[in-house]
Amino acid sequence: MQKIVLIKCPKCNNKDSFYRYGKDRDGYQKYLCRKCNHQFAPDRPTS
Image 1 (cartoon, rainbow, N blue to C red):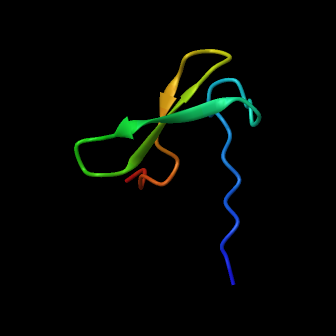
Image 2: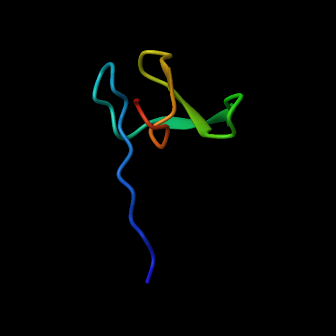
């Protein structure tokens, strides 16, 4: 069974156009929103 992950930009809530943008220093996948150019890592723990 595959895990379905819904990713959206935390800044503009865009869920349609973003792409992988490398990894952060801890190894988490980063994404770049094409709408607002915000970089984010949705899998990274917040605390």
